[in-house]
Length: 168
Image (cartoon, rainbow, N blue to C red):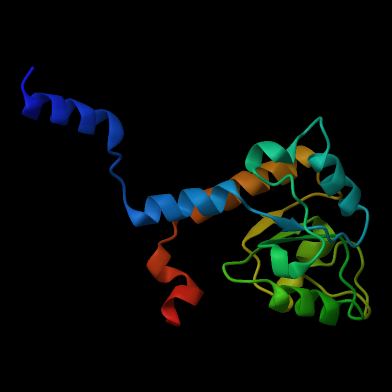
């Protein structure tokens, strides 16, 4: 075997060619850290999705963060009242870019059965929502499906389209 053949063979086993977008998307979708934030009965389903039976850890999400400054996913699980809406918005604004939102349950999506002056008729009125998980309350499998859809959405984005990248 000549030196050129040996070098070509060694490069074939040690060089990995891809794009920056693919690496960026893989890193983002494989390490989504949600903020532990539940408002009503949907929060129990979110908590059970993190337990051993459904295991959010296989998505790289085993670290439920206690502060928005360490999280990049907000799962709005439950009824958002007008009194709670400013706090939801404040937590969203404190999250670093890129940040994502999953609206979980009928109450978070559209106010649910509560057609009241006190209940916000959809969290998308105050913050942008990336994935909607319907149900009352949705099963943990539905939340896992929503997380997979979010990962697919992250996989399609480009590093050039991320808001914090454009500001540079």
